[in-house]
Image (tube, one colour):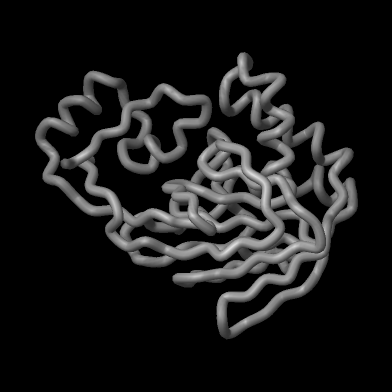
Length: 208
């Protein structure tokens, strides 16, 4: 059964990916006339996600947002990010895509199916939901001033060339940490110490 997604959450990033910035009336017209198309999804351990997965920093942001969700997705997320910038301490991760391995303290550990998260942050600006691959983005440990300096750069999706950013596409990733970490998947909060993340090509059918 083909699906359609209308904006109504706090972030609406995946709805934006499929339908862009348009009114509900125009989107309904698009849905009624669009042919069904299959899109990819992701899975970590036994949990599905369709937009993005964030471990550590991003998970702690979602935990912080529980107190400020009434402010809305983008504003609430931005306030939580700014607050967490001052208090977050990077943990050491062991990450692999099967052929390459990374072990370091990372500020950002994200695996995304789509290009946007947090109500407007272009984490992986060129990510596609139909290419059969996930995009992994890692950002190594940063000083407070660097965090503040590069926040607007990441928001605009202009960070992919920076020397402390690692970007890979792949079908499966493993992520391990030395302690259980907060995890956000499509805005929901989880906790785990080890993750196996994989792509599910053509998992869902949407009209868009």
